[in-house]
Length: 184
Image (tube, rainbow, N blue to C red; front, side, top):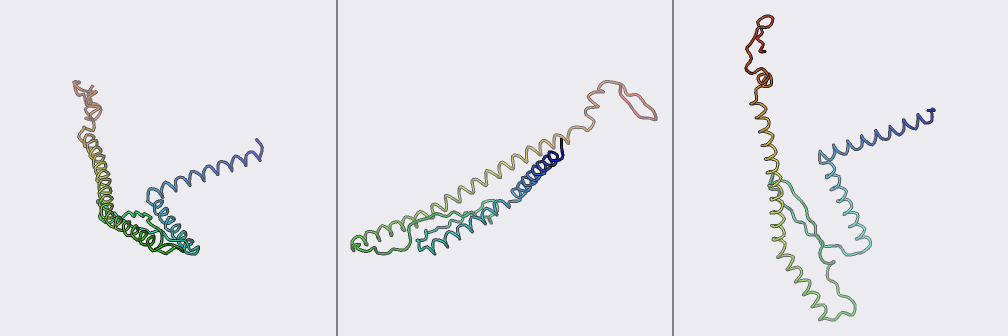
């Protein structure tokens, strides 16, 4: 193996090591919740950039409804659901008759009415789903902890020298050395 091959092997090993370090750092960030935080930050910035581009290009903005979900476990957490609705404000098109304008306004009013009526139902459904998910998570965690406690309780209740007691059962005790009892 010459010097060039040795240097190449060292470089490859270094790159593999850097890959392992990067993987471990990402695992730590995921454990601490930083990945979700970074993802939310990126999505927020992306949505702001898209909105700015739409405004500058003169395109209509989508209507956004934000639904805040209550967190059943702590009462402080929130999840944000965004849905897009109809196009921008009503504007007459050239050559549109009065009856067509009235029909379009009527359909917009009906759509708005349906959204207003369905919003509380959607919110309640989302809150119920979130509560059920948190309840299931808490139940699973409680069961896991109960199993762990039972295993530890069993470990504590078992005598420390039980293996010695089982192996020496029924044998008379003997003195070995300076007063130490030995069965066998």
